[in-house]
Amino acid sequence: MIKVSSIKQHMYCPLKLYHQIHLDSKENKDYQLAIEIKKLKIDVQDLIQKNMRKVKKEMTISEIECMLSENIDQYIKGTVQSIKTMNLGLESSQINEIIENAYFSIKMTSLKTKQAMTILDKNAFEVIDMFFPNSMYSYLIKDKGLDIIGICDKIEINDGRYYPILLKSGTPPLKGVWDQDAIELAAYALLIEEEFATDVYVGFVDYEKIGDRRPVVMDVDLRKSYFNIIREVKEIIENKKKPDVKKSPKKCEKCEYKDICLKN
Ligand code: SF4
Image 1 (cartoon, rainbow, N blue to C red):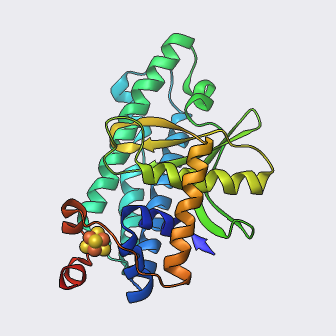
Image 2 (image 1 turned 180 degrees about the horizontal axis):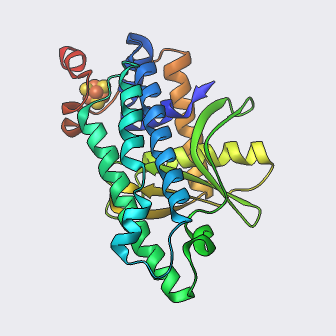
């Protein structure tokens, strides 16, 4: 089965996907690391949600922040230590990013919670569903017919409708979402439709750096683009077809395969 992560990699650069699949086993390590980081972020959100139940409407914003931060630091440090023992190549910049995103999320949630409690004159446990709707996290989902498998960061369920959510720590575009994020969401929308026998009309990308949620409509054009891309991915993975790519200095500079590509 094709992993959704391979589709993402293809969207970054098809040749990178080719190298990863056919040249080395680094892909598995990167994939594993990405999963561990996602799990940690989700656990942090769970802790924030748990802490929120204790927030009272008379609290100031800094008291709310303090309450939401309870045990977060220790949890991140403990989990980072155990990820390090797995030797997956966790870098200090990634650790800093996890910590920054967690505290940014706490700040944003504190402000929004205070606002909601003041307007509605309620304590936090009564407004918690506004911020944390019924959700499934890190949901492993696969389908033989579609021939894809992936772990959806979050699936929110509201009034019987399912919404795939991606949690992204990278820089967002000025408007809308990156193409690769839209395609990834389309993959999960199709998987959710098969798994839960439902229709998915919209998904969301949460850009954690700026605390912004952006919608993606699952229209016919996006679905068509998804199927075109999956065809190319299969050609690379299953038929070992080496793709022709236009090199992009911006992407290649950061790519671990630049020596191989330059040599060729
Ligand atoms: S160096 Fe550039 S062209 Fe080569 S795999 Fe990386 S991103 Fe693609």
